[in-house]
Image (cartoon, rainbow, N blue to C red):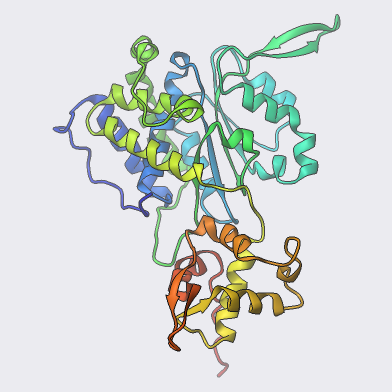
Length: 380
């Protein structure tokens, strides 16, 4: 996927010229004002996902939006703030009970928004406790998958609807069954120099609601047309089910959006297909690798074997006991995968060639996730 992009300029009414394309362009620009997204494709996908919430009655599947990041302060909650004010019938919660969420989903689907989802699924104990909620979120991805519960004084079985689009934000990956049904946006901490507008609910919400209402009005007469569309998809199986509502919205909007949507679908689906569930210690490995480079005199590159040796020498670090026989080259690759850092064949000053890591490949991740603490100023 491409790197972070500046928002486009004013909507091009001559290219496609439709009201839908103009509205999506406006929504895209608004989202980019408040949040730095990890890629242009991610910004496009979120724009289409928000618009799709206004056409939920037309769709067979209700894609989840998984907004995840490796650490705090990656913009996850801010993105959810803005999305909440532009989706259809938002129901937002932090750490809600399963019963409350069950009763929030009606025959007219709302849009569920769950912040701090890691408090629900972030540990095996919490995941087990919230298994019913995970089941609801999985079932709600597809129409006509009601949840059956015993309710009322007569203890009769009652069917609860589950179909509704949902966005979940949290640290670390969500359960794999949810991720498999989601448009996954992997947020990053802002780098030095990356700026966004401050979001103030009292000031900014009215403008967002005006845009939301314009999107809702545009979509009102398109439900039947959306239900009839079977767009050509660049992916298959569950990925196609999940992305189809976004591509339908793009095809209805016209302009550049049909091509834009399929490009985002192909790129983001391919990226997620290569992801591994290995998680945790991702900030620690970055900081410890920086220390390892410093202890070796900050060379331009370190051989993988040398880097692993230095990491495992620290008695207070977890790397000597990581896995069955300490941190391995494979484990190291997996821990660094989310940051886009991998080893390469490197020729060293002594003429030898070996697998290793170039120091400059870490600079962006170090700046975003473990910036150096500036020394305190000297006293007078």
